[in-house]
Image (tube, rainbow, N blue to C red; front, side, top):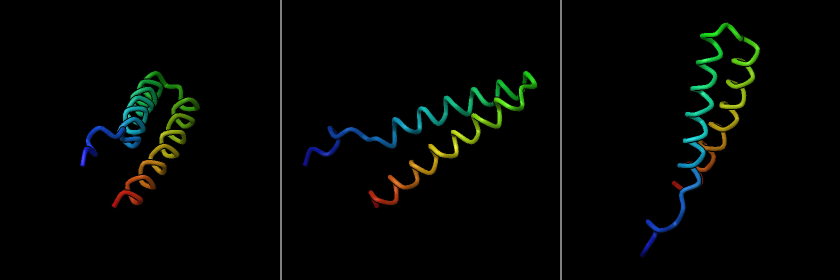
Length: 58
């Protein structure tokens, strides 16, 4: 009945996903390809968690 009061873990993960992608973009612009690749790999792991949560909720 009051499901809108329940926290949404996917929303928090999306926020961190967006933040890490932003950091990766800045690293790429600076020419720091190693940091860019590490941040991109981390963001892909977060995206997998988001996809799993959304698959469960459907």
